Image (tube, rainbow, N blue to C red):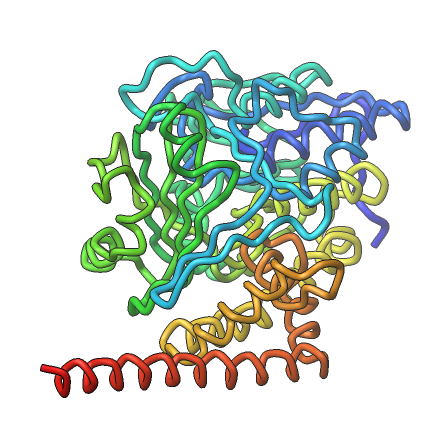
Length: 457
């Protein structure tokens, strides 16, 4: 069958104005203009990103990797200063065996922190711009129309898709782009209505904001994201992210619960990061779900799912995955077609690549979990990283692996392959031996000193 394409006057519904939905609209309208295609794009989004707290929040830590910053720049999208809350130039890694600061491997490798809305609940209204609001404005300038309504269902009606909203209104469209994220009820509704559709597998996380004041945040946390490798069951990744007057805590793992949160906040490695060793009460918090396994399938005739609604990176760089899937979907729709065959040939390969890399990511995080549980391994990693940071121009193999693992700047496949390099393996083995021998020697010396003390007395 020939592909089904959009024509002049076609209508496109984008459900969700997060990064994937706004970027799809921006890219598609730019491509449509380039090929002389006159179409209407409606973006359905009940929230306003100029609000504080849940009304404008998009349930995210708000970390933009250097990959996304650079890719957006190549698209002519430069993040304004009032969007970036803080530019980060290093990671401070905290373990029970010591701390180390991992500086950016290259000068251009920097990360930015942003608010997806207008800040935490009960905070002063920010004079800055939200990241999601900025991207939505770009889509509006390209011609997209924002519909402030909640989509509750969509159904196929002949050759078109019918979109139904909470206020009982509905409309017919030639294409529906689902970009509502995994915390939306819509995906559950679609799964209930279709035996062939399976929404993404999810896990519960924890995000909260601590108000410390801009001066305290700058003095205490500096231009660094603080990450923790602690032996806490179920914890995959934890970070404190400085943002203006606030510090955002992100806990990722397998269904993060209250016990895990309490154990993490009570650990001395975390308390020592705060002034006077006291963790303040959170200004606001939430338990958003994140996608850990892709939607099956992520497309059909006249429908495609992008960002967290479809395929995204495991644990890391969800914003980068939103950019990649949004652009791939926009290119497919503009230049190939809106039928399932076109999406399978031109959009699905990217989703498959992301899913395959996520399988490697599960293995990588499994190895990282073993390191978190073994103190001798943590000593070796700490020693190897610290020596690399203090040396001159030599290779920084462990530092680079940790940087890309924390930031999500490289694929998990790339990270795994670099850890299999003979030089990396040899250096790690040497530092594992040296770090633990030094530790044993220091313990022996302390024991002899104590014995000498007892003899003298």
